[in-house]
Length: 433
Image 1: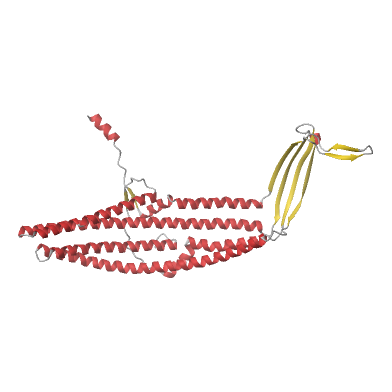
Image 2 (image 1 turned 45 degrees about the vertical axis):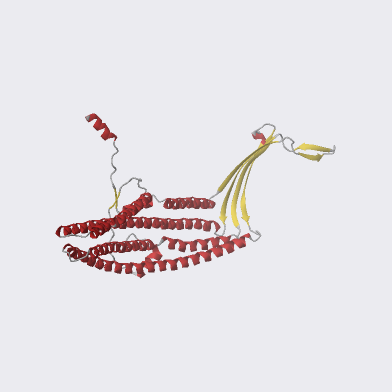
């Protein structure tokens, strides 16, 4: 029997330890498991390779070639040496040519350098967009974490309300012991108790649903038991609009990317101007050519040659392609400037709205604490009066419901302040105040 029990214990699955997470830990896991962040990282890495590809244009370019031919009908030349036209074979049966060519751009009026600067600028902009995507992931994790905290508090308040209803029912039983209570009072009190159950079930269902989504967000196993170590913060620092606005302009990655996009389009416009200018290159070629009666001609049939020189490429006429490419670049530069101005104004409005909500929410929360304190005292007084037979059952139930509603409203106000703080942190790219 002992052996069987030991085997059963060994086969039983071990209970996993609960996963306890602070808010920073949850944020870190969410960023680590975000596909959007990983996609942005890959895009930045891809642009790094694009930059290296463009930079390669500034280095010498070397090409090699190998040609081997067998003639079925060999080319001939007609010659007349006084004996009538004669056909002279120009090559023998096989022909072989190998060559290596090197080119180096010497001067292109800034085209190569500008192209390299554009590629480098694109990497920097993608890095800012990568940071913006991380900020989105950070905010999503904070919002999910705070929402679960609110759901937990809502469930706890619903359970407390049910417990209070049971206490009210016990108080009614005490009154019954002292005198006769009507059947209607007993039924109504039982209904009051049962009316708390749907709120508990709804709160539990919402909490379970939020946790399922949160597990997916942070990459936790589907059956992981989560414990949130932090609580809704109750510190409300004073915020300076001017300071936050400057930080937003300087740090918000989306705004920074839009601003750098103007510089990028200016460089592209410069590149389109340079398309009208010539390119000076150095060129060198080494060839080894010959033909002979064997498949691979012997050295005596081969003749090497070497040349070098300068090459100037001048664009003369392209059917209007360069002109329209230049005008496209002009349009893109204007669009980039307008987009930045629009984004900056939009972000300023969002920041002002968030600050206004932040200050208003603090006032609402402080008022809700006063209401909560009064509602709790009211319930205690009515409960005491009910036990002594001086208050009605309806008044008791209304007082308890008012207290419960005040607790929920206070937690919702506190949640709102925390969420608005997270929004402001996202705008200013700050980790906290």
